[in-house]
Image (tube, rainbow, N blue to C red):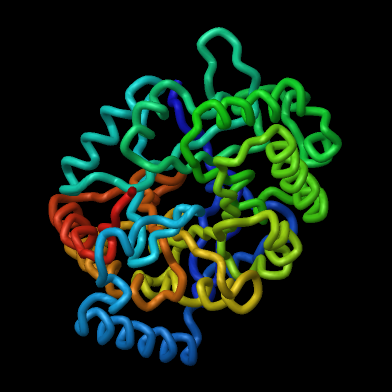
Length: 381
């Protein structure tokens, strides 16, 4: 059984004006966009804006790294909330089985030519039973990887493969019903680990309503977990709130923000899906800029931001296109105010044309060169 998230939550397909978002291949939840809406083309004004953005980012890249990337190593050490002041972290989700996370991370690093700063893993809220460890935060393999990497743990209010009755919901979590067997147990594991970790509760929560509850239910559940950890003396969590960044969900996303006192970092997941979503090709800048600007205007104008998942599909007619896409990454990142981490999603999504992993040597070489940029090489200590 794969020791990572075995399925992706349902994701409605976006218009191309607000970035792209994953979808379930078989059906849509009632109230989702119409078929014609799913296939909207970029309107002329959006195309012009995107062209200007791409040109601006290219100009910035040509001018070299930010002045903020300069300075001594001591000046650039991470803050108490794991923010790199002189640049940004580079991380990835690396597909792995139950016991081989360290080996798979090393293989990825060898291919990309450097160590990852952040390694991203996924967990549910199931109870340990026999060899089942999906609900166990900080497995032995994660602890080994965490010796020389930062960890981002995604914790979902699910029981993967469980019955309907076993699935937790936000009201249960907020009421404290899961404290003794789930919340407190994992809080103590993190506390005993000692090192700081990024922790996300129910990433892409804007896709989980109404199945898991209302936006208010989510906020109450998130705050309960946060407050429970605090009551147990857990002070080594960096609270990371991750949304889709899909702007058709904008009103819902705003309602689901737990508040500045409960969030340390804000993350979002935007992709170039191309034929996976019957959409036009979007550059890296086009996938990120609109969501970034909306978050800065509507969620937080000063929290560190994380591109918690980013990646691109391929173009069968232009095999070099994926490589060209990744080549833009460092220049664009320098132009996105407050983005302090970018994590590549090196895996597939359900459906035809939906493999988002690096597809060929050219793509790997391009990413290798991109993440060698000094801006993405910051001291971990």
